[in-house]
Each structure stands twice: as C-alpha cells, then as structure tokens.
Image 1 (tube, rainbow, N blue to C red):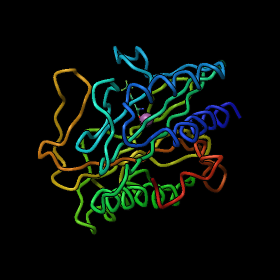
Image 2: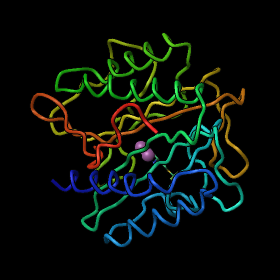
Image 3: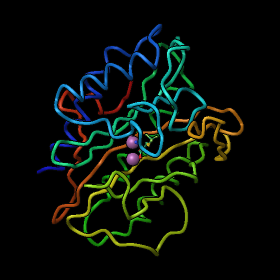
Image 4: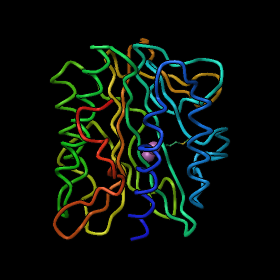
Length: 249
Ligand code: MF3
Ligand code: CO
Ligand code: CO
C-alpha cells in the first residue's frame, strides 16, 4: 500500500505537469512546478541532491538520453521531444519513479520513436509475473525496438526500489536471455527502456549527469514502477487521469 501511494503521487505529478509542457516553457519552470506540487503533498523530490544532482526532476530533450538537468536558458520549441522523469519519496519513506515522453508540437520522427518506446515498456510489463526471468523483459524490449530499426541503450537500466531509490535487482533492457534472476511475488522494480534512432552509444556531458547519444540522434524513454503480485503485476505509477496510455504526448 505504501508503494501504491508513492507510485500514485509520482503519476499525479506527471498528470499535473502535462498541460504546462508546451512551446515557450523552460525546463527550469517545469522543475519548479513539479517541486512545488510534490512538496505541497508532504513528499520529497528524490533527485534533488541525490549524489549531487542539482534539481528536482530530470528533463531530457531530443538527443539527451536521460538525467538532463532543468535550466532557465532554453525554451521548449515545436518539434522537440522530451522525457520528464519524476521520483518522489513519501513521508513514510517509499519511492515512486516514473517518466513519460512529451511530443511538443509536430514531429513525425519523434512521435514514432516515442510510440515504439512506450510499446516496449508495456510489452515488457505484460510479461511480469512470478517465475518469469527478468531477461525475458529485455528480450521483448530489444526485439520490438530493433524490429523498428531502433537501438536499445546499454548504459542504464531499471532497478529495484522501495525505501531505497535505487536497489537490486538491475533490470536490463537488452542482452542475454534464458539466464539471470527470476521474478518473485512482492518484488518492486522499475522498467525504463531508452531507445535511440541511431546507435546505442551514449556519453556524459561535463556537468557529470547529462547523458546524450554519441551520434546526436533522438532518444526516448518511458518508465513505470511496478510490484509483482501472486499471478501478475500492479503498475504503481499508472496515471490516474489515464494520460500514460498509448499514444503518448
Ligand atoms: N529517476 C531516474 C531513474 O529512473 C534517476 C534519476 S537520478 C538523478 O532511475 F539524480 F538524476 F535524478
Ligand atoms: Co528509475
Ligand atoms: Co526515473
């Protein structure tokens, strides 16, 4: 129940910010709005000061893969795509972690990438139940991405969470199948595939956080926090407003 509450608050924060994401807004403004919303509900923005991260949310625009730092310099413009990643910690100490893509204005290339990335997330969630290997999630993500000509980022993965923001197990989105950890009832973890239009390689900018595609191609990511039930899965970060259903944006 505590994890459901944490997940719901992360999802509510994404619902809240959705109408504010439009051309002309800065990522710094989105950061302040999300921070205020979370704080007003008695919770904490988990990224703020996490290993030195300077802001409350991550905003990753276009060729930024993840961990983009909000700022007041650049405004969103028509044709941008942006991942907005929210992690909250509730007063009782549990984490909810979720991210979605926003398609700002029109971009057919960006929309397609976002749609396939979201499909990868939902196809993998559909497999979650006790007895299934985590690597089966990686298999379905990688197959769907590569079938559409996209690549899966190797350098970041999903993770267990609960009282800790990042905990075991690592939830990989690519790689070797048929071995590795088996899903058990009561596990909490995120699935958060990142897909690139070009090659999977990333590099970290000098700020120590911002991960970008080496070949400067667009990148997209969707993330949910889930809990494993007796015979299936509970999506903790499902949007109460229904905004996380395909198509995104
Ligand atoms: N929310 C990210 C994740 O999905 C982690 C962000 S860490 C930060 O795991 F420090 F960059 F905020
Ligand atoms: Co996460
Ligand atoms: Co996240």
